[in-house]
Image (cartoon, rainbow over all chains, first blue to last red; front, side, top):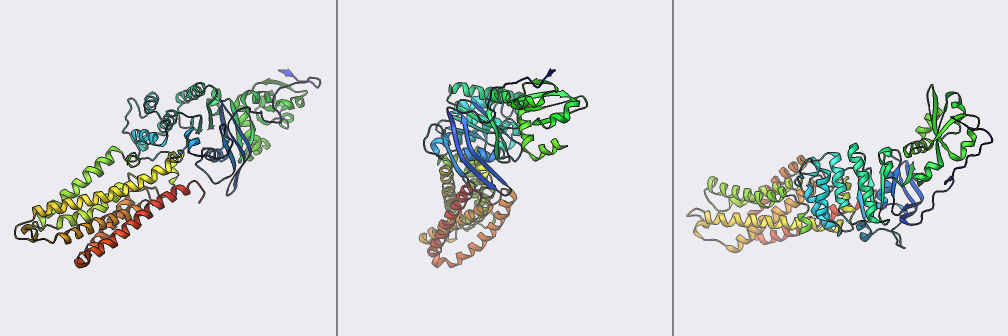
Length: 322
Length: 221
């Protein structure tokens, strides 16, 4: 354990008060607002770094899907503006949609469509769709079991296979940006790993020009492909930054049970047991742990995200109080 | 045309382009020959009455549920700038296909019925008013198209097959009622014009409603 005494000064480089400034962006949004009954999405500023994979993290109902639908152009009733790629003018049009591959939850394709129909329709909908690439991805991902049966209907596919089909349809296109809504959720662990490889390959092929934005609850599985992170709670972005910066901004603190009560006030989130406690602390607040026997570790993105979410949700606040 | 075809599966094409016309014409001719002794007109009546139910039920596999509140299911189309245009074309081509199918099935039934007509009947003897025949054929076609389109329009507010079946059964009764207008053979061309006007109206309403429903899903309406 490291004893933090009053004289020790811990310096952590990072972005403690301001989000990282992004040089090139895949998209920028300003003053986004979308109101539902009892919920409001409010994003004063959003910048998606170009050439990176960005994870959009948040609890259920935080507004992730609404935000992604707005960015994709399938929801138009919102206030604010979104500017895509290097364009000067905000707004979405067919030309921009051609450059964006989107996979969404729920009924995305018509249930009666077959794998072949998805191919035919994609060819009509998008100029940059490659039939051979689609077939190759479908076969590689083993959609619908061994041996690709293109006559199989979407409704007969499992959730996992449906997601694979969506991925095949978007990856078979020439795009600049992928927006994937919960791509990992219906996939098995092996396939999640494959998904990470696919995202990495996509970014590598783009040579810094292609970007990915995906929402996820499976933070741990997707961490190795996440470069940038947006944490959304109650319709607001409560934290954002490059993962490496966030890992410097936050520290995982483990300490003795006796110090638990004092630490509770300082830590973002804390788990206690009879033996001790562990929690996430802002690097800038480490000096407040002076006098405690604690060990410091670099947190995972999952630990940071959970801590930030706990700090910003009523559920988290209740847990902390308990 | 391609816009429409991409919405249809191989099974749908087989069923609607081949099996449905074959079955209706076959049944019409069988009734014509076996049950009514070849009077020349019963086959086409049977086909005209049954065509709407076949069209309404088969539509469930094509655009079933497109007018439901939950037509967000067309998300994939909405991610393309051409999605709505493709959908609109597909809806219109589907209506054109319905009209051509009705015309083809009625004409074939009528021609075959005439050929099969028994000796001693007007048809069998070749004593026919061809103008009136054309008017009646057009009437069968337009009435059948109108009822099919009205039925598909109504059934698209749900996506359950039983709803299509229910509307299909209702269409049979509407057809039977509509066929009573054949008694007004003197003004058959007037009736044809009325059927055509209603056919155009219901076609426009069908496409417009489906597009509006889908376009509304971009907003919270």
